[in-house]
Length: 433
Image 1 (cartoon, one colour):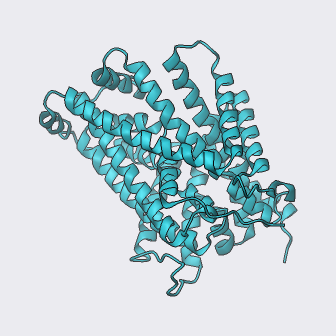
Image 2 (cartoon, rainbow, N blue to C red):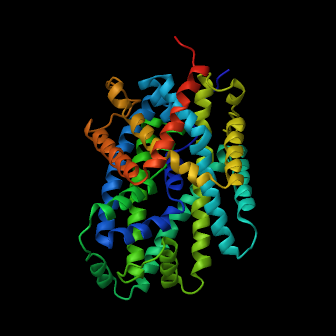
Image 3 (spheres, rainbow, N blue to C red):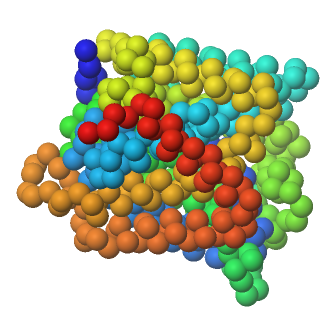
């Protein structure tokens, strides 16, 4: 029997999920990389503004789709309704086997690295990362209430962290106005510097669309989903812009060379003094905890949708309505993430699937083109100024795909080939009508 989970996630909890899922370790490394790539604060803020605006356009499209199909699954459901079961299965194939466990493993590694840095421990990295995945998997199994509290707390913590960093940047800058003026004077920017900045900004926003997998559990989706998606993306845009300004203020407009980690360390010392390493490490641990919790909480909902379509074993469908937990799907994700951590090659594997993930994101948004436009319905959010938001978002998707394929053709080809292997696999599980 297929169960429908009760709608218990409030608008604030859904918004917190967007913020915590998106803002992770990239809150520190991405602004640093962008400042070094484009050479100043002004161009960096412009990139954040443009990519943030285009991401809001995508959030508008997803807000309509999630209110038209307020059920577990997100992109999988949109692809199934617009392009058929086979396209949806290939997306689920890719997400189950590599993307979701790969993201989980990557977040766990980041959490372990900074946790060890904060404590000064010499414990091997992999066991700590595996323990983190298992701990947050257990938290997810504990139910919706525990996960929701973690999402709210870490979202509030991240906003507080941003305020502290910006305030410290202003206080340590000496002359904030001079720092900002100096940091906006840059040389001409070419495609070789702009392309990495655009790609970094896009992936810094990665994950807001995962809220679509939770639409079945969000209260009053017509009201909550647009507010959570659009508001969450807007909050994230402001967060990244403010952190970038704090970096510029703390370095008095001078863009450091070397690695991103070295630049962040320089900023930390400028903001907090010699013990900045531990301070920033604790901050990153808090940020990544929220992202890891959000990833493990949302991902299994898509597998439930596939199980309902009988393209996954029915036993994986078991859903604890009282706790809001999906034990089988969660254990699959945790198990595969631990396998990737043990192999130590998860970052490379995940890289192969980045362009394919971006492609399916654009394709799921393009479902609006294939589906008939809804009439006036108080239960459905209609994308304003349609089709302009969709065209703008697809433009962003196309630019990122071209830039990534040009920069990493081998990884793009391998990722596409492995994802396409899901097509013959689909013939084994999808009955022809």
